Length: 117
Image 1 (tube, rainbow, N blue to C red):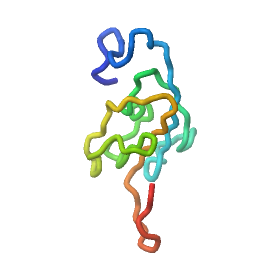
Image 2: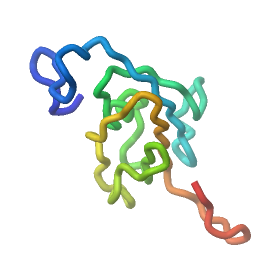
Image 3: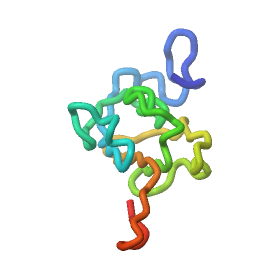
Image 4: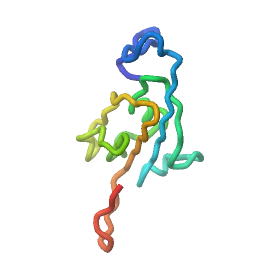
């Protein structure tokens, strides 16, 4: 987990009465990251504890950070600067109903122009 958890497992980012609250998000894997999808496939729903972060999802899916090129939460880039194998923003907190998309490097096809994720 990340630095927001103290020794007894309490999450300091959320209120004391939210320990049992769960959120549901949708996770989508694109391009080269689809090989990490497993039997559930590249699109799945995931239940997480309130206060869960992008880093929690990366850990749970065992995604290799060096293979992540882009992370979008609800269509917005939450990890600027990761291009080329940089550090991801593990601390971006997720909300119920978020759609989190992970993309590996996007292949370029000369005949069809630049691809869009």
